Length: 252
Image (cartoon, rainbow, N blue to C red; front, side, top):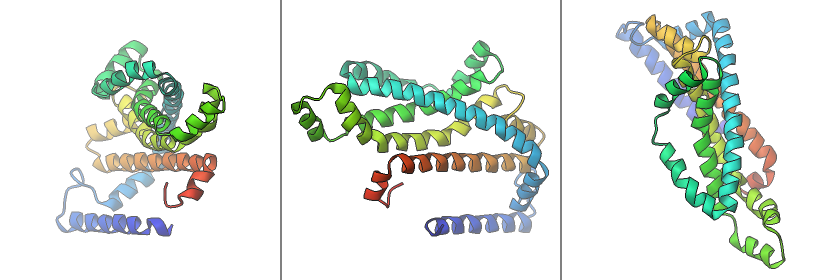
């Protein structure tokens, strides 16, 4: 807690300034609500926000897991087979030039307004950081260890199991931390374009009704959910790589 005390202090100061400015200058609620009004909206719509949040979290986690499976498969292939990396790595980079907002409507046309398009949107958002981080991690392992195992007669899968994959785990979890914070955002983007439930739907309805305090309430919920998922990935990274954090306790 002491490590985050300075950050929490900055947030509290900004919230106090925000409240004072809104009260002193009598800013209309439909333009900029005060933090106390946002808290009130959170309290009033607690049950509604909870229901929408569960839908968004399910879509985010499903898409995130799909991205992990696809990212692991492609990254391992690119790490083990140089020709695969030469073929697919440029295509992977080019794919990030296509805005996800432009792809989402096409997915809705193909798969309808159910959960599938949202899950695919989340997977597309999370796929790139996971794959690239693992590919770079596999490429940055200790080559002396690889050469030593080759001299000792180790097979490629043994080298991957003993040296490459364990050595790439820090980079892999770094990519997971980035992706998991994008997962909620990806689910909300998918919900914006067509859904009956979810935080994206709550946001859209609140915005169209000029209930800006509820828009800020949804933003707070999205931020909290993203932080919780980030903390969950951090917990698993410490559980799976205790040696990494013992070696560098200031990291993570």
